[in-house]
Length: 249
Image (cartoon, rainbow, N blue to C red; front, top):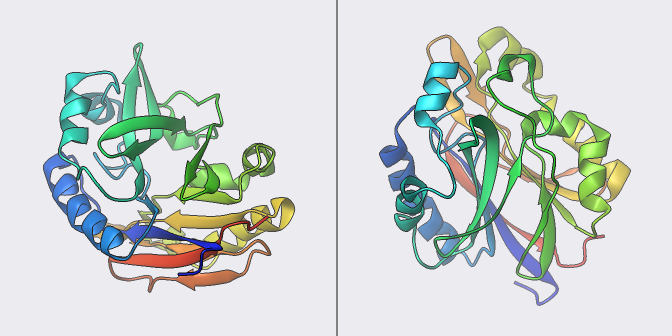
């Protein structure tokens, strides 16, 4: 790895549906793999921890207050050392639920991003209002969650704060017909945001089947011109590890 690059990683994972223990066990293995590869940053999919739950009862049952002992217990089960983590979960605060990506370093919560642009099916969640940026290995990055990347202003808010990388936790487990229609469309949409802003984009998605739904990712790195620099195969879990120019913008 060159001193002018930073190594980043994204996990393409199975779905863990209301199985926090299973998700954490899987995450520990992926984190160890990313650490061994020298990654400074590791992204997991949207809703990774509890599952992408949009039914109110299930979402409220699974949601975590980030100031609670329950969340501290979750963080305490992650490795003490390793890359900076971006991990999707369902958050509860003040009676509201959020589709959130937390940023964790060494079991310590560094910050969070709450999904700003919500689908019609996500009425259980309240929209986020803030767009923080973070740093890993000298690389500044911000977060858009899945559907956020359809909105130019969401990526622009990240770029305007001097970031070089847009990190995109996603969860595209969809009814099969819709999944087929969108199979090759996710990267082009995200690529438009790269072209508009000069950001690179790292996405992490789920793969597999659940009932009549199927997920194929993609988990990929797009360059600042929107071209695919690296991508995992669509139909299996895996870890994408890439070197990104440290001053990509």
